[in-house]
Length: 68
Image (cartoon, rainbow, N blue to C red; front, side, top):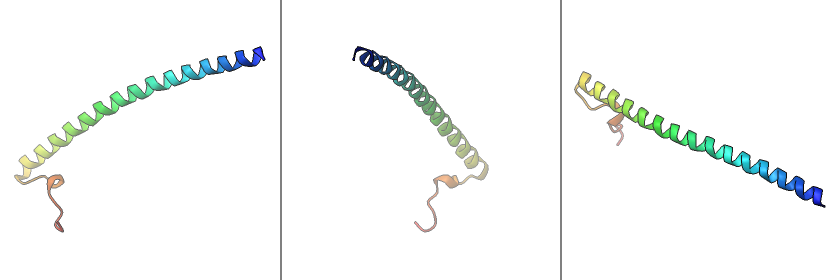
C-alpha cells in the first residue's frame, strides 16, 4: 500500500511540473500573439494610409460592399 501511495505522489509531482511548464508556454504564446496582433494592426493601418495617399479614396478594406 505504501509503495502505491509513493508512486501516486511521484506521478502527481510529475504532472504538476508538466502543468507548470505548459502554463509558462501558454503565457509566452499569449504575449507573442498580443505583440503580433499589434504589429499586424499597425501594418494594416500603414497599408491603408499608403493606399489612401496613392488613390485619394477610401481604402477598399474600409468601404461597404455595394449591396449594403
